[in-house]
Length: 156
Image (cartoon, rainbow, N blue to C red; front, side, top):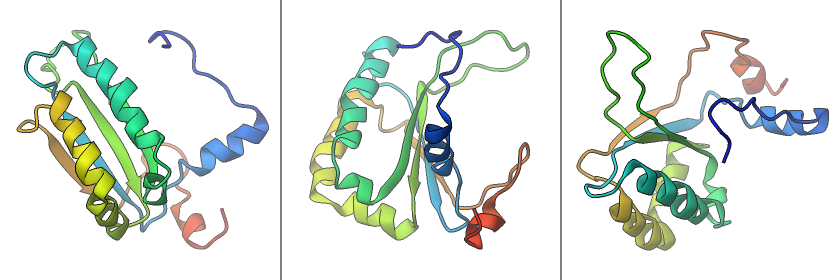
């Protein structure tokens, strides 16, 4: 596991085009953010270990899910007191799930594998009453170049 102060990993020029192409968001894509608290009785470390070593592989190792899920990112949150006048973050982590469409998300959630394996796993480590989901399909670029018009026109 990388330390929080370790410099970012760099890609070769060949890898960069692959990595960057997955970061572009088409205007018709759907991104779901899930905000999670750990199940009562689990330490922050137990929560992160399960999420990273069990939940992550449940998603990444199933080729059927990649038909529906374009990108999945876990963000493990760590408490910080470095910001004066800012309250504590009330979540242990959040995820990004990227889909080509709302229909793709609905189809993935209807899969027998998702219904049996994925939902059962959620109950093993998440406080389901505290889980929050936010979906959005439009992004506003505040820093950097907005490639969405070029992507929509097939030029990027």
